[in-house]
Length: 248
Image (cartoon, rainbow, N blue to C red; front, side, top):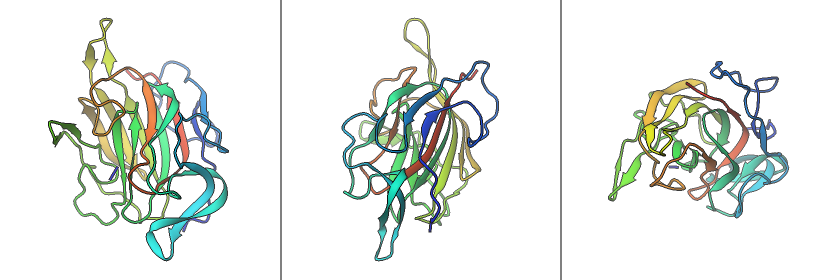
């Protein structure tokens, strides 16, 4: 929530390990599900309405306004910033356990977030230079919210943020909540690991329920969509690689 001249194509896909993909530890005894949810050319694979999100060739900080982007024509980068804050972007596919590689870029002071299953947020924020990061800083696991109070947010162990305008990455291993045959939750959702720009910032952190501003803050399920927050400020995403696995 709270330079680059080389741009890779944006691909949101559930894939097997292979060329061009981030290498992850082996965690599954089954073949991964393969599902293309974004083709790099348009917003197919995302639920309507998609607001002012669009596919472009790249972004760079506006020389006259560090809080805004300049946009480059082309394909491969998904951006919400041209028309100001807009809707959150929600995938048409739903996932359970996943390993994810996500690249993002924000201008000065901007704010977004990646919600696994549409419920559990890893914060995207311009936190460059913050000495003591909080749950609301980049890489934080955002707090839950109840009775007008926040609770259970988890700050990143280290502030690994790059300066605004530079591309950054998350590598996340997420374990979905577990339920018995009666629909009763038996285990909380868990971020097995979160790396921010290659630095481990979370390990084995359970999330007892949906974080603030989730698609549904009251209920949980074994599956849910990926959600990218678009209503807080300019943000660009590219190279989103989601590999569905089955974690123990």
